[in-house]
Length: 126
Image (cartoon, rainbow, N blue to C red; front, top):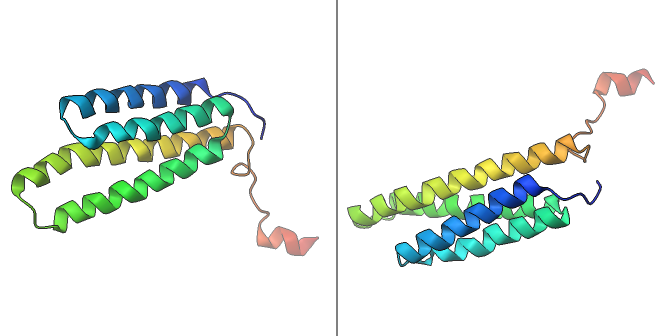
């Protein structure tokens, strides 16, 4: 796959990074750390390293998925559950969305995702 720059992915990730900084500042929480992860995806997009960006998306989906499950069954205060629901689940959805967008970019550019293995019956015919 060529080393092209993916400006659409860059601007999405940069915008999400700025959003994480603003929300993290307003809520006085550690959500500003997400700015680093979105910045990582933005830099990977400029460098053309979609595999790296997709790996970060997978890691963040796993992290937010586990945090969401822990919040649901952690037995914390109802206020914490509401805070977690309104904070973590949209973040999880954004990482899932970016994962599929990166997957689309990789398949569109003719990467390894675009190549399909031959069907078993076609291999036997040869």
